[in-house]
Image (tube, rainbow, N blue to C red):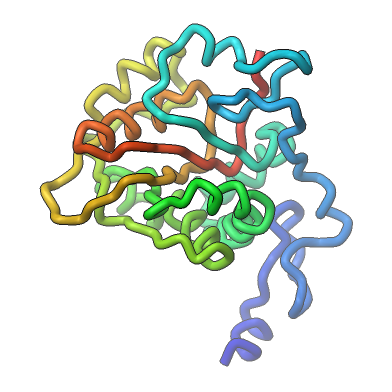
Length: 232
């Protein structure tokens, strides 16, 4: 059945969209386009910092963080168009590849945290209906495929719809995410979790989610994202 699916519905390169061969996940010519976040990394958010001796990026030095640490796979500029198509143009297949890459390249760092679960950043019900899928959940499923860290989609929810973050200033992003998440009462006991999202910019989204998770007694909250901007 998989052979038939691949014959009639071949996978496409997440960079150039060319139909791929049976054993390909990305064009050989495109495989070097996504750029890994280079060291040195901010010890808190994982962004690249400009000086080897720096421990934290400028943002993390001046902004209190609810999360305990985080990692990102790629520099956002190198995958901007691909991520935009993944999120907004109905290409969940791109995210399946990217999730596996997150698991392959960052998996050892993630499993070293001994997490109880991966928790995708949820969408509002309205946005989920419009998009048809949660891009963060697709990434989390790809990470699970490699690392076997369980995914819990039914733990964290959006309390209300929020504005699109990329159109907002830093202060507006923080206000936009206030009380954006809620956790229904449940009997699941988690000590350490890893939030999964597509893009890390100012940290407003994962910060608000981490604060909600810690408010119900989760001790350690980390995050992993597909892409991030550069630190200062």
